[in-house]
Length: 398
Image (cartoon, rainbow, N blue to C red; front, side, top):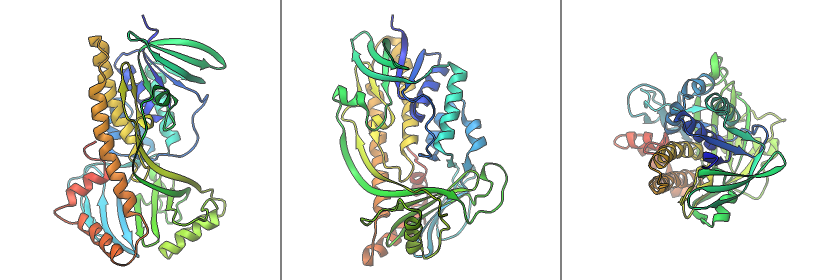
């Protein structure tokens, strides 16, 4: 008999959610995470409807909503003009509109919450369900023996072996398990450099609850000089994201602020003590998502550009699919994970196309190309494309 039904390698938000979903089904699963404590960095922030549905299945929707900021809407701007606007929320209607007009919500809520808080809520839920998180436990190697998977781990400095009926590699973009198994890592279209910083929201109003001090509107400036994103977070914080277009660094607060001001024509109010970080947005997909008793999940299976906020939510949607596949495999005694793999590939392909489109829309442009881009954005905000564009923005179909 294996030691566990499932071993999950990697305790990020996707691995933690899978652990919760499996525990809620009564499946004996442990989540091995090499870090002793949570990751304090604010990384992924957007929670889209597919992700919220997965969190709800794990019994976390209320806890997430209590801390998250519910966006009232989003605007796409260029050269000081609002080209299209989308309203989020529980109302009715298609959502995306040309110009500044308000109107009913899309019925597809979009939330923002710093990843370290999302992780904390997932950890607490997993502890409540099973206590299956193993911090300070690094997976060193895995071997599919046909009837079970043998896993070598280093747990707080001591090496030992564990066995499981199935193993899930949720160990990130640089997945050592994926590399060791030779499952491949294929480049997909879409790549660009960015810088970002989370700072007090200089234009905030006064509210109570998670949205205190925030105007709760996300703004995407598709400017001639390149994309500038302005995304509200709970507690009066706003994330600024700037597409890098030249050789100079934007990791300095003054340079970061000056670049935004040059593109928008207004001072964004970035404080002098801000600490922008630079990153490369790239896209990849594993050559194979599942092999025998082993499956890849989250960033180990597919890297999605964070522009558009799809990566974590796609991983969560995949976790729902994989949890159902694991339950069936354990019940039937047949480790067939191929249906999950096919669904994951289809969803990742859709997300890759969307992210590549978002990155293209945020590239520097001038002349006829800029005019054509602005015309396209207006068209997406007007009938008959309004409903389709609203679903695109909120990750419909994933």
